Image 1: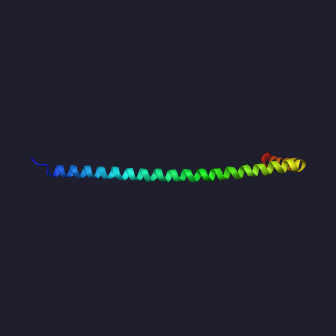
Image 2 (image 1 turned 45 degrees about the vertical axis):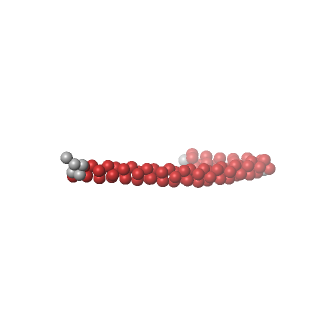
Image 3 (image 1 turned 90 degrees about the vertical axis):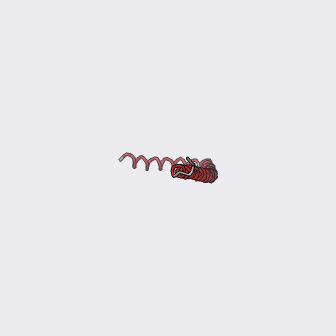
Length: 89
């Protein structure tokens, strides 16, 4: 019996197809990992940017409250009153 029977040819073709599928899956996994890495880097940069902006706004508000305490208290009371009217209903 020789190795050139149709069954052996199909088996060889099947093995080649498996190897090709594994290689393609590996390439896709690598590409997905690269995209995920880039996304994490960009998201981290944007998050850091927004945290910086939030800190700046918080500092500005604290400075304003320190310079204008009466105005700040009246504004907070007014906002509380409006929220009370809205949520009471």
